[in-house]
Length: 236
Image: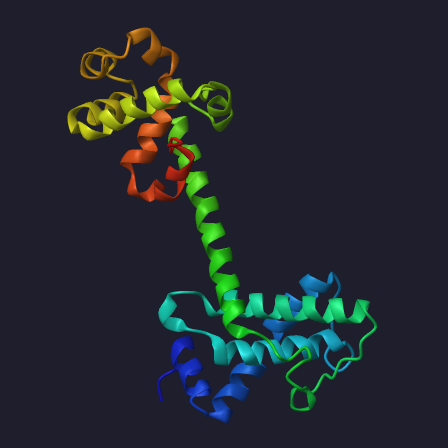
């Protein structure tokens, strides 16, 4: 019998195959210990630490709540569910509330009334944050090719809205002309003469705003940097 994929295993477990579910959970107890111990900042052991009972329930619930078609990682989602459950546990402990560690004994108002959909949304938000961080990293690397750093952009970003709007317009024109954009990406230099003729903006202004212009044009012209466009927009 061929080995099942994670997706196939999760689907069978969700459809009621208790043997598959139990085997999957048993095989992932080291994962549950690792995540829980990292959250608790100490090593946890089965039968001794209540936190592992909480985490086990959370992992079991993650199996039921995970949506593989969304393209997310099950392990990342399970980590999020475990984290949220343990946070709830810590909060209730701080209020000296008694917890039931058996899911069958829990009523709809206690720890186990967990909003799985909310957890999945939280996970997706965290994934988006990770994607954004990766985009910033790639953008930073790209800027280096043009001799620009993020610190430079903080310093050279136009302070007046009129100046920013002018450079924004120039950057848009640059991106709208493939030959000029190609000149920029190939030589790493602005086609100053052509931009001056095209936009009517003085060469001195273009030279002074060179780094800002390049940084903005790179964002506007690269679909991979779509999430950074909000930083270039002009207030209407």
